[in-house]
Length: 165
Image 1 (tube, one colour):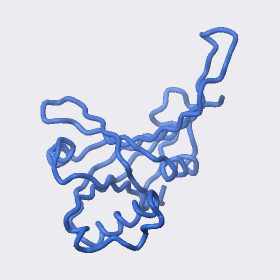
Image 2: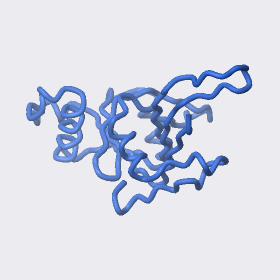
Image 3: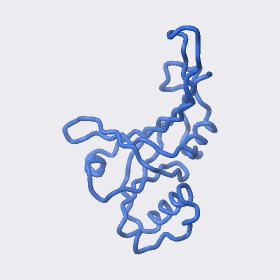
Image 4: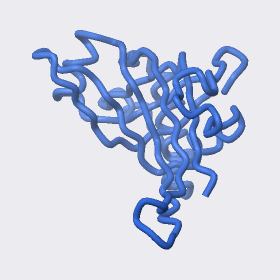
């Protein structure tokens, strides 16, 4: 994380021995292909959506459609949760109760903002291009950017967790 975002480490974890350090959390955030953005709908139901994303400093940037349930939810309530997960698989054992699962996960709490500034949107879209299609890096146009919606999620509280398997 940046100097502005301090991972809470074991702050929200029941199993403090599974806390991931800041470097491990940052690595997982940057390498994960898909994240989950969780918002609250107007009727109070939680809504968790898988999204492609990139990390820019202390924020996550997401490219999405200009309309929909998550946009409505963010406009109404900016508080969100963002998570990523890396599944390593089952660790075998003699009995079912002794089985374990290898994983790493990061959960970030923050605020979502819809980005209006064209320069910041171009920066976000370029970061997404570098991550998912590096061969297209440098081809983000101002015209396309103005038609695109970008969400920034601050990462105010970040917790990383890993198994020891």
